Image 1 (spheres, rainbow, N blue to C red):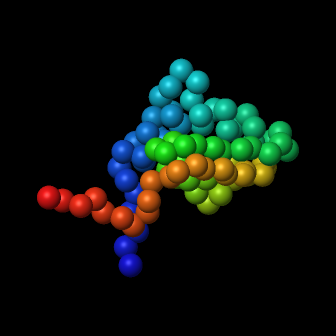
Image 2: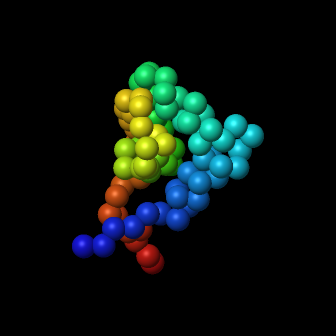
Length: 86
């Protein structure tokens, strides 16, 4: 079975991680040694991006280790469904 990632969701996450005026990568790095819980949330497209971010922080190298990451999403995109073409 093949797995894939929607390119728009992946691009959005990369842009938020590195190119905004407050890069998420820097913020997560500051939280790494805080010992706090980090809540990752999102709705609709944001829920899909939150799911990708959760996978990144849970399966990454030591950079994101430290806090406990909890994820709450609302109405994420349906995985595995292809849109109908007419």
